[in-house]
Length: 196
Image (cartoon, rainbow, N blue to C red; front, side):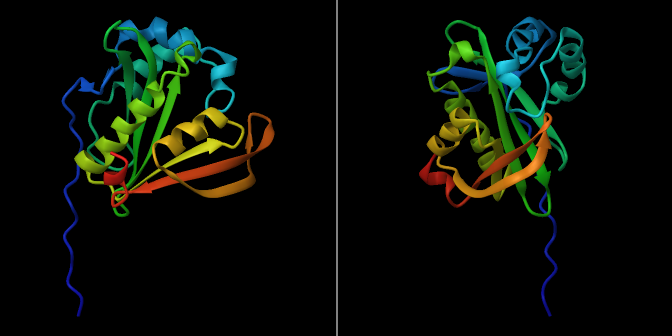
């Protein structure tokens, strides 16, 4: 007879800001609306992500709802954090940790950055911090990232993080009016220490 295993009491309650070498990851505030609009309204930024260019009203609504979360207490929840340059105080992007399943201890990361800050490794640095939160603080077993195959810059970030490409789903979604191919990347908790 197999033993019944009690479910783990998982939750994530980070102390903010989360500091990396050059960045501060922190909850978004109403004061970030202008900076968010500056990059989330751009068609080039939104080309490969699952949202259209945002207007001021949409950003304001998100700040009051989805982006207001600062803790994870159950699967189906996510936290979106602003990525602030520690020296300048400028918001350079935002990152997401989404808790997919309590049973399977799985999550997903995502990120969006202002193109004016590309090429400095900020996305890699911030996404690495989100992996740390997911593996070390929340206790996830597996974290994934899903991207449009044409998004070469994002694929490069995921590879620098040490995430493994596990799937190429050919024309699996009708995305913004066209069939697109998805790349799925993943990392296991057991692999995380080598990439920490």
